[in-house]
Image (cartoon, rainbow, N blue to C red; front, side, top):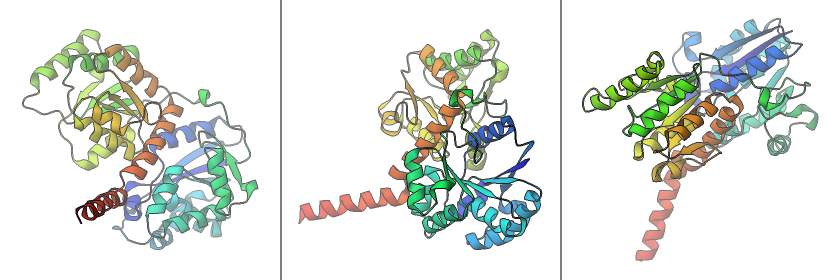
Length: 367
C-alpha cells in the first residue's frame, strides 16, 4: 500500500490567505502511517508556484488546474492521498478524476477559521469536505461541524493527533514518536537573553537533552557582546556549545523558515518583544515557551498555546523546554491552539473592526 501526503507551500498559501498544515503535523503523520501494517511507502508532495516554474497567481481554480497533473502523476499507483489544507485538498480531488485514488482530507480548526476570513474560501472548504472520500478531525466538536457542513457521518473519523488513516484505530497520543533531528531545535527570536537566569536555563536544557539544538536569531553585533560571551562560556563549560547557534538579524523569509522547522519558539525577554515573538510563532502554528511578563501573559494562554515560566527560575525553564520539545502531541495541539487564538484575536480584520468600534463609541460619547 502506498500513501501520499499532500500539502501546500507558503508561496501558494500566501496567495489565498489560507492556513496550511504545520510541519510537525507532517512529521507525526508520516511516522504514524509508517507504523501501520498497511502502508509500505509514505511519500510527501508540497505544492508551490516554484514547483511549476510559475509566478504567483490569484485564483485557486487556476492553481488547481496547473497543479492537478503533477499530483495525478505523483499519486498514480497510490492507494490513498492525505490532503492537509484547502489548496492541496482541492488539487487532490481534481487529480482524483483521472487517477481514481481516494482522498482523505484533514479538517483542521485553524484552517477552517482562516478560510472563514477569506473571500469564497469558506464555501470552497465546505465543498471540499463534502467531496472527500474521508474526513479526519481532531475532536468530536469538529466532527459535528463537519457533519453540519454536509459531510456524511460515515465519512468522518475523530483522531486527536489528526494522524489517522481512514478505518484504522487512533493510537495512544503518548506513543507519538520523538522529534527527529530535523525539527528538534528550539528557536529564540530576540537575540541573546538579557537575564543571566534565562541564559542559564537555555544551557541547562541543552545539557538535559543531548538531542536538542538552540538557535538564537536577532543577535546584534554591538551592545550584546557581554551577554554573548557569558552564554557561550556557560555552554562551553557544560560541553554543549556545538549545539548553540547564534545568528544575526535575518530576512523575514529565512526567519519564517526557522520558525516553521523549530520544535518550539522561546520568548526569552520580559519586554514587548517577547509578545511579538509569541505572535509570530502562533501565526505559524508553533508552541511557545515564554518568560513570564505582562505582555507575554496577554498573548499566551498557559497550558493551551504554550508554557509561561518565571524568568528567575532556570530549572523550570529548562524543564519546560525539554518537555515541550520531546512531546510532539503537545507541540501539535499547542501550535494549532495558538493559530486559532491569533486568527480570532489578532487578525487584521478583527483588529480593524475593534478599532472602528472604539472610535464610534468615542464619537457617540463626545456627541
